[in-house]
Length: 189
Image (cartoon, rainbow, N blue to C red; front, top):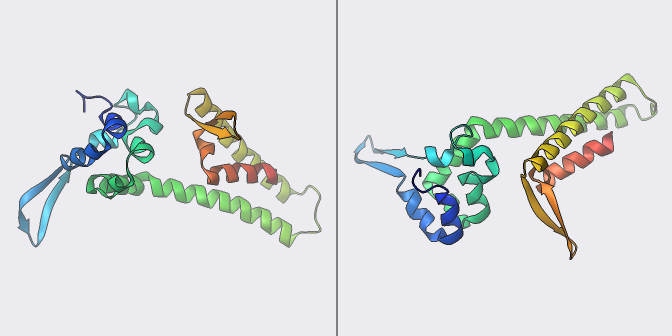
């Protein structure tokens, strides 16, 4: 991986059928069984990547796993190395981040619905509504800050609108969920 920088990217673009061979070489199986089990070692540090060790990984959207997601054949995600890597990342930080984000936005939505259902006659500015507006404005500001940072760093994706318009959209807004989250926060404000 040090000799051939960007190996996963090159294989994804030029020879995706060789990805399985590469990943097969990153697995070691023991010769003997112990209690019906075989020891297996996965050598995934270069595919796992850390943002500190590799300047190529300073952009998480160009990490080997991200490149696989965008360019590799779907069946590569059934390979044991990729499954182990995904499982590790999900258990280390992905699930926690996902659940916190879901809870945050569900909390804002429930708070809004509670105010509208429990206090429908109270349309003026109350402490509860001011607090909800403050939290929603803060969330919107953070999301817009991330979008501005991504656009400034070039972490964007080209999206074609209509027949002739091409927009450079920050990665945060390229998923429907995040776009809906931002729009709902703007509407609640």
